[in-house]
Length: 83
Image (tube, rainbow, N blue to C red):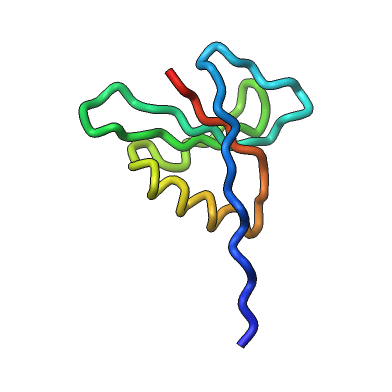
């Protein structure tokens, strides 16, 4: 049986005020929510003003699992906000 290796998921830790350069689009963003459960919001940015919300409220490990799945067909850069 042939299996594809899982993509290596690495996020770039950035400040919330960070604005990616134009050549870093499209990309994923993992943004922490201000709740007691330490949830994140997973977004896919197509351009500076256009994005798609992939997971509105998800735990970090579940977001990483989703990014592993997405990375098989859409391996884009990942920016993770660190407050």
